[in-house]
Image 1 (tube, rainbow, N blue to C red):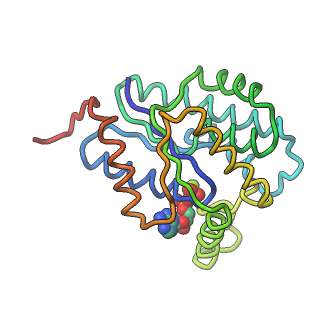
Image 2: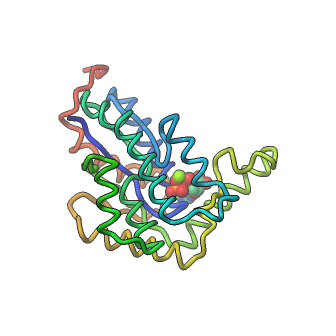
Length: 231
Ligand SMILES: Nc1ncnc2c1ncn2[C@@H]1O[C@H](COP(=O)(O)OP(=O)(O)O)[C@@H](O)[C@H]1O
Ligand SMILES: [Mg+2]
């Protein structure tokens, strides 16, 4: 079995940035490593993502939203994550099932036991070995994300703003109170399962954060076979 590592945290905390930096570093060291994201990561999952993030989909029922996330996750786990872990590789995932509990559970008020049941169906009970939580003040994270979006708008055709990353999507656009419930939800999730989580302040230089993350990963991937390792 390989190693499954996920990144969680509020919008704009740097999950995608750090997942990519870790991916590049592990790859350069010769580790078999796969980088993917939720919702999405597969052809079918990316189509589901488009439905989920579309700003026009204001009528989406919370149950629909929950089940679409679960459907995308089921596809990701069965198509990519499990097969890759079975080959002994490292899978890095930008968000995973914890986000369901934080966003649909604590954020939207869905019953947590019900979410647990849905999640178990979607994942077959697969949980990460290690989860990084990048902690940032909700407003600061949203500001970072909005700035990234604005820079992208300036640089590209405005008509394509919401289809090209970095995006500002239906889930980001929810009110501040929602995002604060989500952040409090993550804190509760961490205290329920402290062994799996590594919590870091997101408001520090990229490289410093990447170093801290890498030093936590080293012991966890020690047993992974590196076919391309030299010396
Ligand atoms: N440590 C950091 N310090 C300052 N800006 C950062 C840092 N990490 C990421 N950013 C910037 O913040 C924005 C959001 O980062 P991103 O990785 O997309 O966050 P997330 O995936 O958590 O939403 C991007 O513009 C990114 O370049
Ligand atoms: Mg991201």
